Image (cartoon, rainbow, N blue to C red; front, side, top):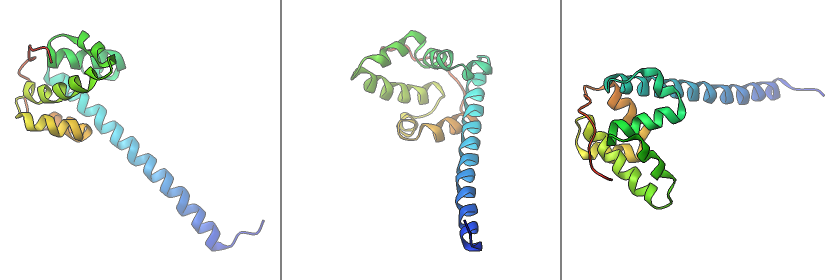
Length: 131
């Protein structure tokens, strides 16, 4: 096959776009892991627990509700939506922020996790209500 310079340049640009988005995704993933690590440290937990999938989720529910086993209610269809909305609002409350920050967490969780991690938000303890 005979490739022209333009064809080779187009192929290189196409591949660089793919690797550029992959690098951006990896940086976003690393920032989110760092955000969770810092949130765990603010709550008095070990940061490495945020890296273990089920343990991290259990600890996050424990931070918000005081009982980590409530994460199992996320498996119930319909209730999981209500629980997620309540979780987001209470997450903002346990980090000493207004419930409106919880609505932000509902729609943009990656951004809000980084906000809670790098802002002056402090952990105040779990909210002891059912949902």
